[in-house]
Image 1: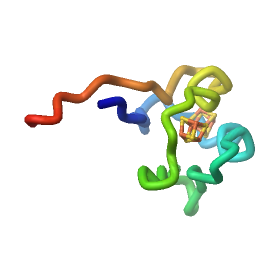
Image 2: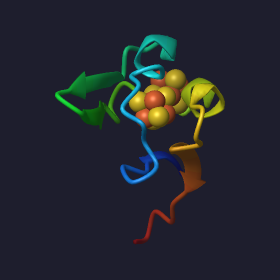
Image 3: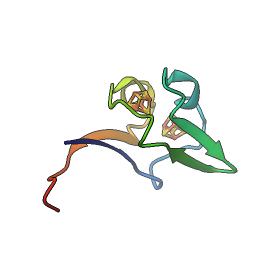
Image 4: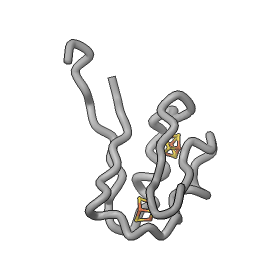
Length: 64
Ligand code: SF4
Ligand code: SF4
């Protein structure tokens, strides 16, 4: 299944992605981006909008 992954080391804490998400699955708490994986539909909008590629959709093995 697909999974949205956030790289905290790359992230500029710009919060640009928060407003891009149609599901409101992203939020900034202080300087930490939080992903609500229940709300996220893995649409990829935020991954394309992030200026540094800190958000990526990856395939995860269900068996793991
Ligand atoms: S758009 Fe990218 S750099 Fe900006 S807060 Fe979101 S993940 Fe971090
Ligand atoms: S992949 Fe889509 S639904 Fe998930 S956080 Fe990004 S913009 Fe929102």
